[in-house]
Image (tube, rainbow, N blue to C red; front, side):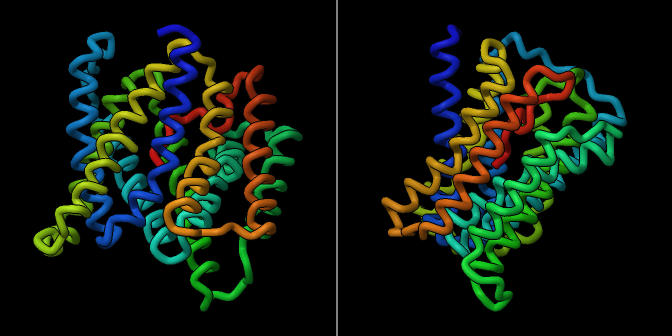
Length: 297
């Protein structure tokens, strides 16, 4: 893969991740069913990718690895369920922008968990993301669907940040695709008891949207991300994936007439700019660029 094709693959992956909320809204099923189906289809897609990518040799897992992957799967399940709840309650735009707060949580939690010094640019990141979330919220009213949806989306971002730190603790030993496959198995097992009684009522068209979520927005997008990192620097990948909300909001605007207000656009711009700038500035340090974690959005 050349740098040019790797960059193209990154943008395609970012577009696919950006479509997550769109497919979640198109599927007239509960978040539990959507997440179960997405994980099940993702397992098949990731297994196929692992089989054809012979350079990704699987590692024998130790007990500590199994515990870490199980915890990651539980966090991933919570992250996805809360995100799709946000989509159902508040729409794609607010859900996507609320989730985009995860780099701010990562900065704070890295300082607490790994005892790493929080630098000035990361403090600015947290501040800008916080201001952006305030602007995105139309009104602070818990009875409002927009506010409730944003809170679910922010919870989704927090859970994804915890997932990133869990994966970071075990990085370097387990191939990313193997870890993602195992975690998706855990997600499917976690949601099966809740989703099973509802599966018979899922329409064929809804299964199509869920399959697209699992195969393209999870399996293919994750595989493109991992493959491109062999050529593209992590900070460049983080900048490209900062465009994910742009793709998602644009498609939602075209399909669902979700017209973002000027205030929401300003808040979203602040969040995206903060992520991009922080990723660029973090590139030369020993820490991973903010957002370089393979997305599971």
